[in-house]
Image (tube, rainbow, N blue to C red; front, side):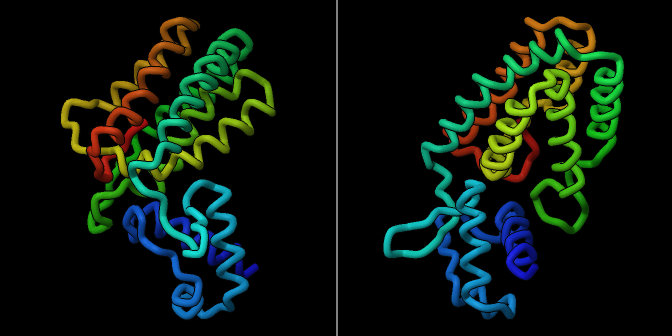
Length: 219
């Protein structure tokens, strides 16, 4: 389906940083660039608005969200509220298969290079997938599909802010943060794991507020 293809291409372009915060997403220009109709582009842009990767502006069309938008703090607050609770549930309910999935997902994340030569300062698609898969594996043990759907929506909506807030904080060791999360979860230490996850998410929001924008992987 053309709109799905255009949606995927625009989503990837926004996440790569091809468009800066606040840049206009002009349907006519995009339709010409992708060789499709205006209707196809508008459908794709509407999907991006639903994902939190674009804004619909009154009488001004569509645009990439601003880096200073309050939504990123609202999303981070929602993640800090929901995900530690889910992780506590996962630790309480998760079985050996859950433990194996967490260990495998962390191994893949730790072994996947975040940056690829020649691809600029933004993290690779492979690292982004491994990052998502690790966080989701941690929470899947909760066994609640409604909560997991909530996680999926919040994750996608916050993906852009993660790209922006990877600023250059050379003191942040995201590999160590993920390792500690895995260890605490598999040790069944719910209190430690939930606290680590809350701090992990909080650091991304704090970096965005400080305007520390770059492509370093975070959160």
